[in-house]
Image (tube, rainbow, N blue to C red; front, side, top):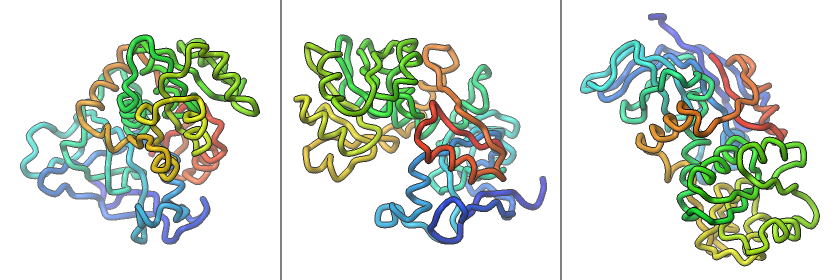
Length: 309
């Protein structure tokens, strides 16, 4: 094993230009941990907020900081007390240490699940945040057969999974997105509703019997829209608009609520079986992490953006 690994770092809060790839000591597994050679690691909007310092009160950074939660790869070393994993095992999972945007990472063994053979590295490596967030949000609003559920940012990394998980549950998704994404939404069982002026009228027209639940993946204006549509606050979930949620009594269940091996395994199996799909918008080598986040921050990609170390 080489003596060093490569990892994304930033030494201060700022724009994408604070990101760089540096050499770090090769991770060594502590008891209960394994080291994974990362084959793919998704990027997420929350990482932008943390890097820019907008989440300092909730998620302060210690510099130099790494970043990244999603990962998939091959086990290269096993710590004491780990009997589930062996070197060579293909796994997917997550890190809570802001460390997955790297060539190698040490993670607790219980934060990994086995990668199904039919699942691509790119999908497996970007499943955690988007998948667990989508799963938790759908569960939070109690989506059931016959329900009509509106979803903002419906073709992003999380939204594209939400609309499909709603279909699996027998609910009808109203996918709020740009008109350019109407074809994808229709093909995946959702009713496309273009965002913009008069959105409330279009949603009412699409759901003449009313909207039963609302999942917000974009911003506080959508939480207010859900209230204006008469949705019970207990059936509104937002993964981003925490202050607004507190004002109206909406739920705020996201990736933390869905971060279990059982949820990850269920999602991986759904993807491997073809019951749902996770679009991959683009892949970038680790050294082009700034370009990857530039694409992400335009907020108009369909599906996930993935680093491939």
